[in-house]
Image 1 (cartoon, rainbow, N blue to C red):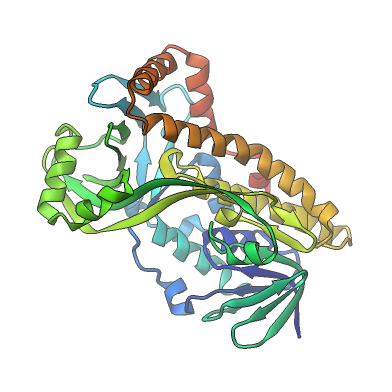
Image 2: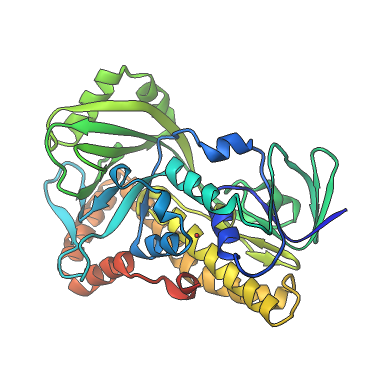
Length: 395
């Protein structure tokens, strides 16, 4: 049996961010990944653009990831608006007065994946095992598809919200199937977006327009699963005209760039984040609905929190897999993630409910938000704070 200090299952940005946060600890780490290393080194574009808070940007800067992100590929959110139905009234979040010049960044997912790989691939204590799946897992041990057995003081699952590793370790999860699909793409447009991100809660679907570099925006369409196939089958020109019309021609003529990609929407919250010699990070712990853009931000801060706990145990000569040392990570991450998960799900249910009482309530909620400065200030503060708790000080 090959022995390591830590085995990480999954080489996505959350798992690699956790590994990168361990640099300097002297811990020997193995990363097991189904994909080839060639794909990790040059991930294909998957249509997704990730909204990053200032705290996440600071973590990525600290981990060395940010230097691999081309400035010209990023968008900057200076202001954000939330619109209900066909109303012109908007709940407005402005960066002015926050002490920052912007609320957050928008970065293509494939560039984040590539940056995470580049920062981990040459670490001296890291062994990357690609083209390999985990066939079996038990406390402190995994068996790979090629028959190899790996042992470690700690196994970390970072293999998506549908984590097979989590399931094989007997950890259940709450799952919220929204019965909806998100279609993502990038579009060019005639008029400048001026750095404004807009979330339009239409009654039949949700439309998010997120500012990228130049006259380009990331477009996110959320609609009922039974309607998605027809939208995906629309000719490019017809799809672009539909988005242009739904957005009220605010950006002038819009054109599709690249392809559209569809993803089913399922929210996941693991019933436990840790067990003896086992921990969850990223979507394996918490898989968020994308409407509030917390997914990768939680993955980054959660990975940093777990790395802090592990490094502290190692520095003190303690067993890094002892659940007593892992529980503070679970408590800290759950304290942040649970309210966001429940709040996001409640928001989604309210703004996808087409009954008259819900329509009235959602309109009132937007107007109330505009007249309650402390609420707006708190939301803006969460976006623009440079440090997200203990983890950022350490994805």
